Image (cartoon, rainbow, N blue to C red; front, side, top):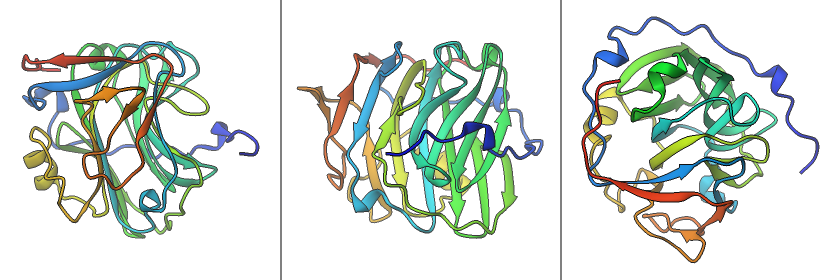
Length: 247
């Protein structure tokens, strides 16, 4: 796999001020919500590399997250990632203690700072959107919190797709309803669909994991486009049936 990626070279764009505070929005995750709780470094899922995951143009990557802390391991807490050395794409938290930011990477980078004491203990919907060589955007609870033009061309990554973990650092918290699209979803589409189950036969949906079934060390993509996700470490599967509170 070569040398580990040099995280010190990660570029961070200054986020724009969102038109609405994300903490002012009432958000309701899908119910029941099937989630993986990750508490130890290395907990998560690994989806073996396949060509269908190597998107070269537009994409949208989204997930529900419930962070616990940013103190487990290093400063890079991967939510979903298939990137290495400037290739691929990823959603992650970066930082330690209360000083963290949500970040979306698709060759270029876009980020939004939000304190861990605000994030911790609440469900949040995060989505990264890349429109090939046009712009890159980050949405939190359906609000566009950061966006800027980009001329960067997405390059495929040779790594597997990781959920909640990576070859480097892991996410501390719960993750649910991970989806990957081959199109740059609009804000309206993100808001409309983030609290409902996707249609597995949707032609734009590359893969979706709802964690309803995790058995014999595997979890399956609802679209069946990818190989089974392999359990890493010892994540716990939970079911939440109550509505999320305000952030």
